[in-house]
Amino acid sequence: MNDDSGRKRAPASYLRYGLLALSAFLVLSLGFALIPRESPAPPAPPFSEQARAAALAETQDLRTASQQLAEGSSGARRQLFSHTVTLLTTQARALLLPGGATAGTAAGASSAAGASSAAGAGSAAGAPGTAGPVATASSGTAPSGTATLPALVAALSKSGKARLVHAEKADGGMARLLAAVGTAQLLQATALAQAAGTPPPALEAPAATRSNAAAACSSAGSSVGPQDGAQSSNRTQPGQTTDPSGSATLAAALNRVVRTEVETVYGYQVALTRLNGSAADRAASLLATHETLVAQAEAYTRVHCASVPPREPGYTLGTSFLQKPAAGLASLEAGTLPVYGDLVALSEGETRRWAISSLVAAAQRTTRWGSDPGPVPGIVLDTTLLPELPEPAAPSARQTDGGATATPAAP
Image (cartoon, rainbow, N blue to C red; front, side):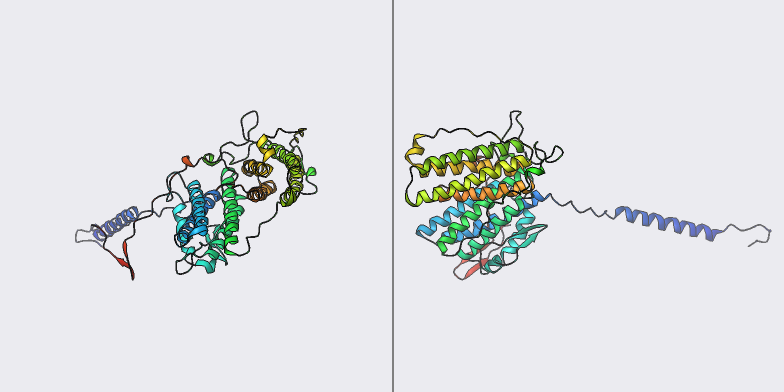
């Protein structure tokens, strides 16, 4: 528009619109800057950590159920349940992170296992719950919260089998720990089943080697060097098999299995000349088992392109072995446990599955001769180095004859 002088008037309206647009832009920019950016989801923990956390949570639930049964029992049953509590306590301490039970993913797995334990004895025979990709078994508590012996047997058996399955995929050191925990839980489930008069949990026999095992060896095939994860969880696997260079290797572990089994065969041959009755029949049967294990161990050694160690002409047996051959055989069987533990940690695939099942079978044979394989068969464990379990949180309710009465929290 032109004024009376003929000059164009300044477009004040355009200037106003520009200022308003600039103000709106600044306001929006400031708003977007103040809105916090959504943090990315944390990465999923490794499988070994998930398996450890799930094992810890379920072991603690089983320990709680065992404590309830021990408190409500007397005599021989109380001793049996107390032994179960001690075993599960040691296992929980071995599975605990150095920082405590709430570190890492342990808290999440504990919550998941705690939720699954509410399903009680009914779910102990059903499908397990899950904590991520790792399955968890329910505890031995009934829906009312009272532990029952049949439920504890079922939960111990399911937890033990789950640990063995997870051991097949976990890293070396953690695989060894999980296999040890699972083995002891299955053995304890068997002992409790005998006390309850129920069938013991079914256990698989060690897998046989492939018929074409020797053909699998090739220069570009399986490696007998250090395996991934073999040094993980060092605090739970002292005394690993080592070669002259000082590094843990699969070849050294296989060689030690062969040598140990050959020596065990020799011990059974000597013991058979000094045993009578049912003990002699048992020894003859187990002698055949160990001869089969020697052949299997040698076959797996060839699979991995390692040299089979030569057999010794004989071994020196102590006077105590000759005087008490049954106790001597128990000692020989117990001596095979850390050997198979080494092989679990340093192998993978079919070889590890054979090592795990052989570890379970060796622990069973140890108990058959009257020896205790311990809370973590296959691991030479110094319990004084394990972290202590955290103290349970103080309850916020006062127990009365009629139940729990809530009390106000302290200011």
